Length: 104
Image (cartoon, rainbow, N blue to C red; front, side):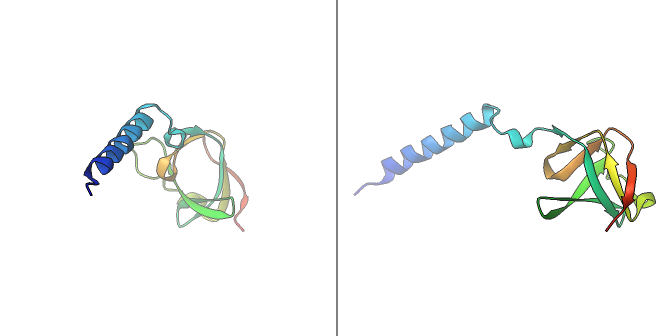
C-alpha cells in the first residue's frame, strides 16, 4: 500500500493554506491596538490585570527603545491615556502617565 501520494498532497494543501492565510492579512492579533492602559508599578515595571490574569507590560517610548524606568512611580496605580499595544505585551506610550492611586 503506497501512502506517499496522499501524504504529499495533504502536505501541499497545508502549506498552501498557511501561505494564503499569512499573506491575506487575516491575522488581526499581530496588529497594533490603540488603547488606554491602567496598571500598577512594581519593581519599576508596569503590571496590568485583565480577565483575572496579571501581565507584565513592556512600556516603551518607541518600539526600538528599552523598557521605561518607572521606579519613580513605585507602588502607584497609573493610567496612560494614549498608546499602542503590540505583540509580546509591548506598549508604546504616547501620553504621560497619570497617578490615579496606590496599588492594592
